[in-house]
Length: 333
Image 1 (cartoon, helix red, strand yellow):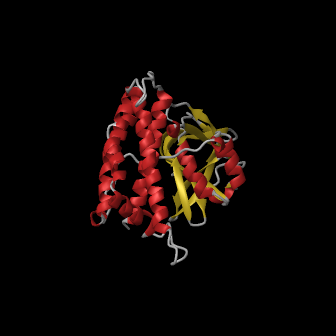
Image 2 (cartoon, rainbow, N blue to C red):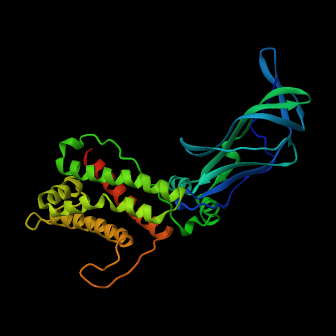
Image 3 (cartoon, rainbow, N blue to C red):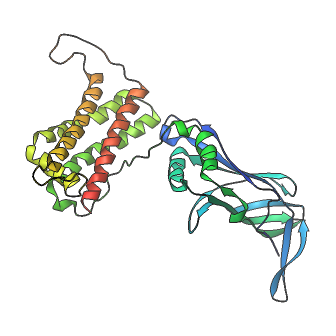
């Protein structure tokens, strides 16, 4: 025998997202997602004459092990899922039950892009073992897709406005340096990528320090160290020309409008020079913590960097390295 129902809730469930669980790293800000509803009676099924039939209903069960508790967002044939949990000792018909899960700001960002201009169907599957009148039964309880719909306005209210994420933006950065196919056939991009990988290695250590100790000086030192060699690349005119061509012209990010006055290559070189200027800014900002004089001037100063200075430098460095890694990856396809 087992407990089975695909319409276990007596009223339309409610999906909500609560305020954040505080954390120092904005991209790791998390929230609690909750599905709430009132339970119906629990049908008990048994096999008779070779087929499964409902034999009776009970008002309460005691879950002793939950093997599956999965919330699904679906649109047509595509769907995305997340795990929820419940710690109630007893589930009773007529009473409200809450299924809870942790969701990160970055996950809400991804989900909002997928949900944009869509009406989502929400479903829930939970399965495991429960005690019913001193016996242990398997249970399989579900909220089917057509029971709860979520339009994008409701999604925006629940997931963005309630969490404050409509006033902020979470971005997930790649710390590792992925293997890029065909990179060896493009020497200019290969040289640029080698330097980016060195910086990425330091950024991985910088992020660890920021998380564990928040030591701003150590973070700035790690970011600054590999920037010297990256800054020097802009002095290689041929390299800048080749990088510009590979990143923007060959892939037609920038194109000539008129054959008589081609401008794509020149525009691409301007863009690449400006990108290297960002490395210059990053180097100068990070260096301020390790010097006491203005270059070429007798004026003196002292910098005592704090968490916000370290976070700014790390975020700026990750923004430009991730952008360039993505552009190199696209150029090598």
